[in-house]
Image (cartoon, rainbow, N blue to C red):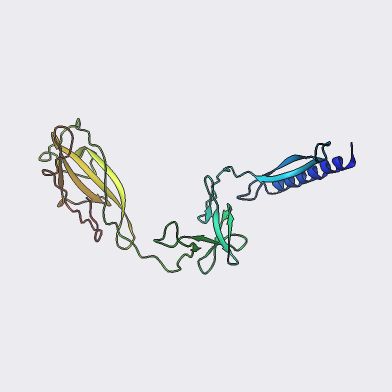
Length: 250
């Protein structure tokens, strides 16, 4: 065995140890992707092999394990892809989503690179910019409409509204209830509940309550055809203005 072949093996093994050691050293580094060494034979013409060499060092970009950190500024990528950062006027990429917010509102990683993204209203194809969270409070956006899609069981018992008055606190005075969340013009959260009561065959009374307060004025009625489709002409869809400025239910 020639010395060159043996030395090539030692050199390649040393590189492999460097890669393995680097993988172990970064086992707790968030977003780190381990690497592996690929070896190749070395030949000269048709003669005996001249040993081995490192042909490539390849990283394994398979998806890692996601962990819960309970920090709102920690991001993780499920699947392929990278987070894009800007550093020294250059674009850099990383899968480490441990971010902090500067006093100016920029999102930075431990190396001081700032997270980038598309400006509001600009989709793919636009120029990414450094994301900056405004320091001032955002204006509250009230709920303007609620769209509900659900099934009502026609086999339900009929409730005679002339005998049993509606009471949101009494589940025996209505057939079904569906709860959601709505916000007023000040950004205050409210609990909104839709009530459905079968008052006759193929006929359902609809009501709404916000924070438990019944709106007895705006009462709608859903009328269904015998095949289960909604009779739009016979049904009423009142505009519920329920203590949320500009809000309505359709």
